[in-house]
Length: 616
Image (cartoon, rainbow, N blue to C red; front, side, top):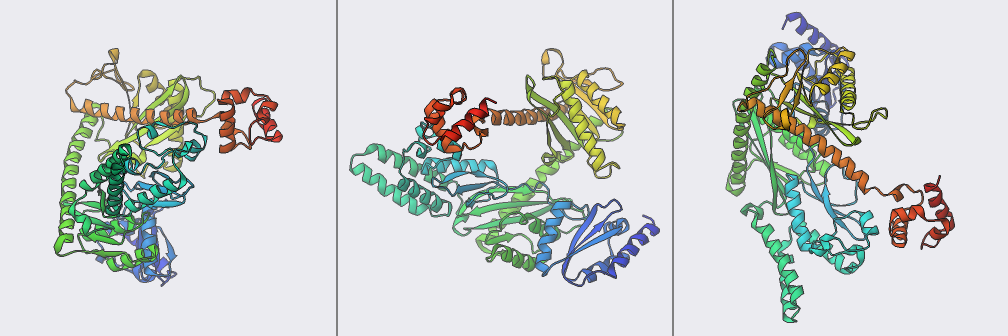
């Protein structure tokens, strides 16, 4: 790095120092293209950014950041705690290259007990848009599904939608296998259902022992009165409760509501393991691998992780961590203010809590060692891909494309992305085929549309190819026709420098006999025992899985849609009345106005609206 470039960055920062506020807040350093290089917080913004002008005191990494800085943005806050939380939010939003970044920060699933006259229990992920009680987070969807399965066995609350509840005319399979009490068809009274809701709420709040005693007493009473069917029902519910408790470890007694977060480092890389305990139950664990510079201390990485991790998640009452982190008390106070209750962050030194943190640290180290082994193998495979496709260096980003449809209906394109860290699922994209000019089932035209939309947007967002969003390899599921479609669009857009490969199943569509097609090369195959072949097959299969899953979701939504859904003035109750009276949506469509008027709740005006809707 030249001295003149570094001096240029320092001059920019010195100019901003003159007008920088002395209040607490957050500052952003921007490149010449407007990209955010770094987000930082400070008790006094002015004092903090002055330190960047003393480049001889900065490590080489921060010197590079200063040299690239061409402008700055300041946001003041009332307190330093607010600045800390805002910093975490902006880091997650802009993903600056000089910050520690929390990767794979998807929202965790919760169990939702939704407010309703017949409350629904269901899995929920994302923004809290429903009124009700949210229980979680759970570390994985499988953890939620396992708990929901137990809750259905024990408390028999409905999991169906409001629309299904109001329109169903006979019991569903869940009621028949004793997983739902059947409120949709009056199989349970409101009071009995409310009692089951209260019991489910108590269980999710950690009061399962009281419920067990109640079930045991009810089973004994039913047995004494020779009501063996009811006694067997309570026996099964007790067995389900026992099954839940048998999966919990001894730490439940001492950690009722808390997270255990431990960091471990190996060869300059950091892994962080998070264990969730809610209502005295272990709700799973998850490993994270933050993106950071090798020179960053483990305490710095863990501290940055904590603030970003709780940016979009409610913090529990207790957070046990493996290392004392910078601004630990400040973060505790900021989270307490946000939650409206005390959030304690501590590093246990002895006793059972210290043992639990030590166990989490062991899991973190094992996860990191597994990941490093996988990364080493991944590097070998990418090197093999480069050799196979005659590339000068291993690819850093491979995009794999596939289309899915049934005779042209619900056509979608899928893009999955892979790189040195494996599949990058937050980079996956789906393309709903929009063009009305396409012949249904024209795979070549569909691929042209996908490529046109993908690269037109990419050229608009990153024309200089500096942000790492451009692929090194395009792997297309198809043969020469799909390859020609892709090359046609790339040529039309003036795009070059990307290795394009189509992979087809080969003779008899036999796995292992795949054929590879590239511009300017004859069709070739890869030896059956070559690990690179298995790797490329896995990439192709992941794109196929993603495209088919997206297509099925669209098709399922269309199948579930009723023609009555779009009729103005017809809600769930009127739709239920019409279906009860006529037996099907098709019969409603064929009915005349007088027949429609004879349905309870359908006025003459509404009947005319329904008739006009279907007979325009």
